[in-house]
Length: 379
Length: 135
Image 1: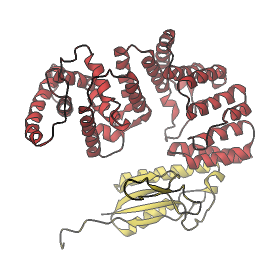
Image 2: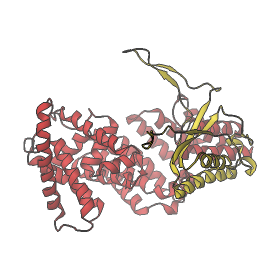
Image 3: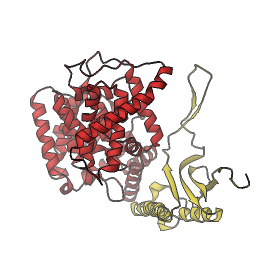
Image 4: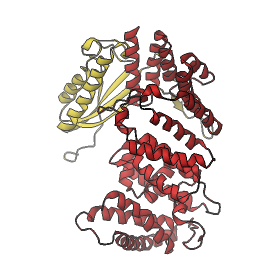
């Protein structure tokens, strides 16, 4: 039994407990205890029926927690108005779990943590390591999140967009600690796509797969960044690309475009080019124009300017940057790149150095510093 | 064992021996510098003396309360003249001498022309718990 299989069972067991009448918050704690025990014991003594084992252990943990809670609760104000299993028979339990964990009353960081634990089956320690915070802090964040949603009724239908936003955030966090958050986000988005009839969910899944396909080529062994143009395309995962493109194509055919499908289309056009010179920048610009209709943000405009620079030349790219404020992240880096392409090396070197100083992560700062150094040599 | 903080400054400290801004180095010189820093941290992990290393973005500002119910007062971004911390490393070592030895080694990272930067690092001991014996 590998960890992924164990994690897949976590929401299954949680649903069983809730259906038996357990309240969500305590049931979730009970499943977490059962998971930790399984991690400890299964290597040496694997059960014949993992699901039954987990349900039994989690149910016992729930009863223990409820008993010890009873005394405490008598003193505390009871804030919970948990819907019981069976009272909402029309709504798919698993989907309900996703909606609950991505509830709009939660902050992004709380929704991410609760989703990873309750739906993803990660332990508090693993989540804490992935986000580089102490385990006690993460435990507190999760129990506060559960208290927040305990007071919120589930009288309105959940919005898949809330869930997609949470999964997008998890994916973007990438990799730190012993859990691969990008792979976890893909697994959960894949499951979501079977539960929700929305081509945007498929668009998000395609977007993740297409970016995941390039992950090995994005960094050198020392952690430094390799930009898209310089990546070894032979290192891209062609199976993931094929799967992403197939999912995207099926989604686009349904003619309900949205921002994730548009982003995935841009990623697909990059993935489609066997050499960087063969990139179809004109079509990429067109997709950025589509994307702007759904998400008109300075960041999208900035990325569009890069594409315009490739399609119509660096001066057109610089013109497309008009109206993008200095405070927009990576603005100086993009301007530097376009000036370099236009042969204004003095301006490019100054802007690269400025961009390096404004960078918010070390890999990007070092990358921009190297660019500044290289352009300075060419002057 | 005692913990020491090595503070690295973007500016505000005394001038290093090899004082050339990063962007004036060659890419190879910059690579060599980064490698030296990574290797240094790796070595301290092997010796069991490494605790933490973090870098700070250059962006920042001063903030203070302006009384209950009122929005915070801010002053920033930092003026060009302000002392600016770039990051830190925390080590757990046997002696003050060892802390100084390590800080000097870190300061010798290569810079422009391959010569050591010899930048000044601020070395600060952590406050400790009171001892049990004699306490």
